[in-house]
Length: 277
Picture 1 (cartoon, rainbow, N blue to C red):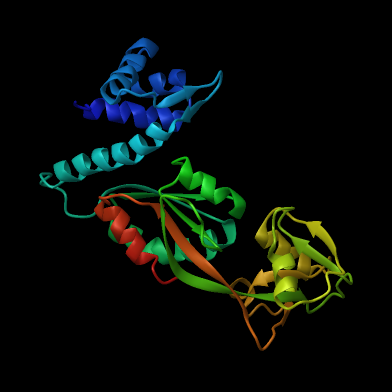
Picture 2 (spheres, rainbow, N blue to C red):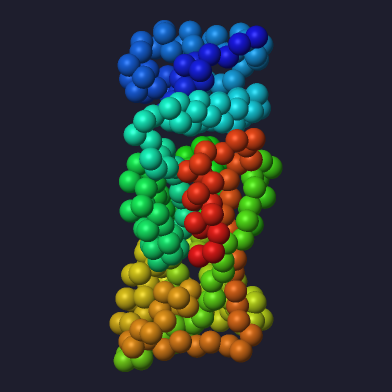
């Protein structure tokens, strides 16, 4: 049995692009040539790796196992070859980080800026999602690392707490806020609900939605309503009043990635950089 590295690369591109036609274009191959590569893998493994839908592809259980193996194998080869690059004087490669928008902008980018400047060959892709989307993002290989405000329960995920956020209620210091109105990011934003649950407060409030966390802060400044917000985002803002309780409501910041036997130097370095944000 033998799995060719080029076939594994084709498999990864096919899964990433979601269809054989798009993957064939990305690889500069005909669809029949790409299908032969995937068929060669399936013949070697004696199992199906893709469930083919009319407009999409889905991994089988064997395909999910192959995904981890292929990523690891391709990355190991890439790192090995770079050891023989006479110009390889810094960490290189590509890594994709996904997080919810407020933590991405306020902490992740700030934390990694010095690393990026020091390692110009390292390419980091930053992507923002709703918190509830992030587990699926990791599971479907749309990102290599995710940051959530809870501990994911994915079967193959490895998690580490890298920090926390204190949540407080904010209101305008200049305009009278609309009473009992709280502003959330969207219908799936549970910041207000979880805050009220934590302090066992009556949920006698109206919800309105603003699609961006920084727009929420603006809306509070204008007196449209109050909001439950990460304290570090509003600390020192003269236009806002912060209602903080003696017993702090803290939510964890959790870094997660799929378990592998091998991690690239870039992957290891980024995990270390983000260990305390």
